Image 1: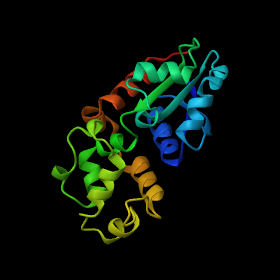
Image 2: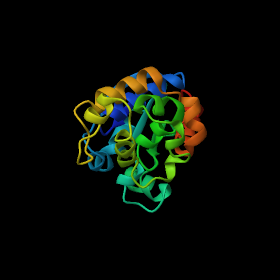
Image 3: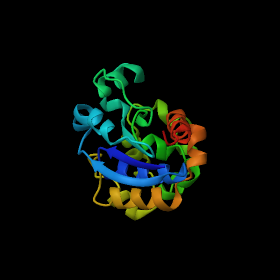
Length: 196
């Protein structure tokens, strides 16, 4: 099935492509909205793209919803409207980096730290991106220390290229699903959808 996807940034773009292919779907048109606020305001509009053998995935970070639970967030993002069954809104809990951290073996190799340093339950972190920054400072790899995050904890100049390579070449979704229930729910939902 062809799935168009709505994401807030570059990293979400690469992750959405990878999980859609992992679930056996064809890649549709990407819509990069530059920020979760834009997705929240406009996500429901993309339901109009759903038809027959075409679906839509909206992927964003739960921590940006400012909602107490996913049920409430779905209502907000759908603007209280009924949506076609093949219009899917999924939230990475608390943010997308938790899904990457969930593949402890491969992500620890990327960072150059022991797998035991990575959190066992990344969905429970308050700020996964900050955790990545803290782990990067422990790295035995000079380029990770210098280019992944800045001294202030912001994305470094090679953050997106390094994460893109990791997602496309090394990220083991099956392994990550075992440590991230929000990723597992996303994959399960994508595997359910079929042409109308």
